[in-house]
Length: 172
Image (tube, rainbow, N blue to C red; front, top):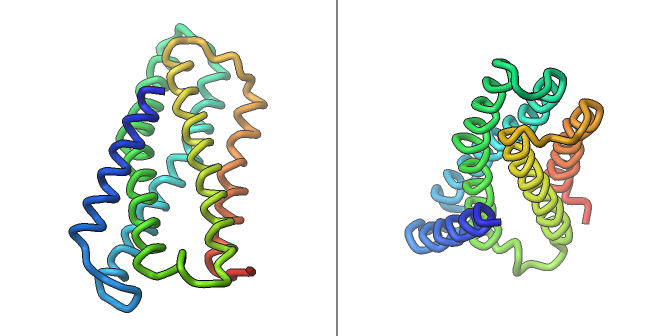
């Protein structure tokens, strides 16, 4: 819970700084740079979100107390702390900036944006679940099966597909 609060505070501070320091509207160069940053951060976040449960599959297969288990603990922690957490924060900050500066919240007919935000909140919840799982594996306290982790490896893919469809097609 402490880490979640820290992540929220860091994200809120970053949002405030970005809104204060980066001018721009929908047609500006700043908007295009921020959109690029958003996409790059999303790709990094998704790469980690797709890879981490795959590491959990391998880690659960070997069980605790082995040298391989200790290697997986390091890999999982580094992936989460060095790539996934920063990428998630940048994705949120840039995405909120784009939505506000682009006028997406103010315009009518943007139900797709609200649906996308719900899905990104679900993705963030999945990220939180994975974060807690990294701690459980680190403490040799994983109780989930290999089958569970194989199934959980598919969840981010489904969310990603739905999010991309909403952003590109804007069905409502």
